[in-house]
Image (cartoon, rainbow, N blue to C red):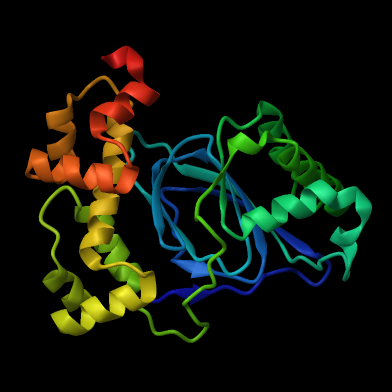
Length: 288
């Protein structure tokens, strides 16, 4: 497995791409491409790895990725037979010719596209955005162009506080088109096993490297140590559990793969800048 450079797969008579996904799970590899990407998760949940950040995703989430921002959606096991569903729109900055987005009418859209280089997750998406996404239709080229313009306009009108940056700053990809990376294999290993015993020796074996070489390789590619990545995955999972009323904080600790409550509290505060209890009080106070 490798980090994949994905060309913008436009047909000869089309200048941008609309893809509809309805399948048991998302199968796109850890990849990056030279296009902007708008995405609506209609049905699915799991973990998103984008740039060097891991976060939860669930039904209804919307994302906007800029060119070169590597990303990968990993589904959780579905409790029902429902498929993972999404709509994805990909377009190059110059898909309507050089300078198209430089027109005065696109001032707000240009700002939005600049933000997309850091990745955006839209909090509390406007229901009108779902309606616009559903207007895309196969074989209706002009309708789809108008729909894309409406989608960008509506995205750019969302309150600034709702456009949550995925990264702190635009990040130049450390992955190259021909990079023989084993990163995706390691990501899947961690995301499938983080609730149990996850260690760098097993990860190194999957990447066909010795432990020391793997640790250097992983940090060079992700800008963090392997243990930092594992802790971020576990803490990210814990943030989702803390929003539910099924678990107390001790249970959240063990359900997230930690086996020591003190270590869990310390790692949670390091990553989230607040304790698990403070996080729960802020985002779901009715549980307390």
